[in-house]
Image (cartoon, rainbow, N blue to C red; front, side):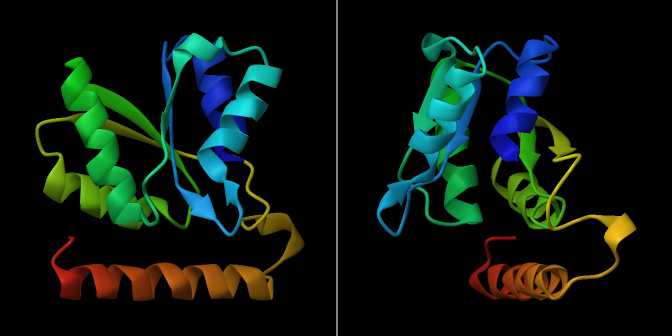
Length: 142
């Protein structure tokens, strides 16, 4: 979903580069998988930057900010799920104050479909995010 949204924004001219940030989930690297998907959707491989060390939202922000700094970029579009966006925003607001971040949640998320009613997966995702925010507050990430 996030890769699809990033490709959509890229095609519409809102960004000329895409950073996919995420490390390994079990045996798969999500950043590599998102790159494969984006290239299959017509994004030039040279327009994709992989950040493959992050294993949580805090690390996504820290490692992505480093890429932005190294390239001299002052702004970015942040694509994430509707649930994760609040936590990502809180981390960016603390650790990347010098960047202008435009938050673009995935517009059609499998976990966020108002027309099908509330699902157990949605409740779990919301609880995960709010517990994550509390944990990040305790760790001083936000």
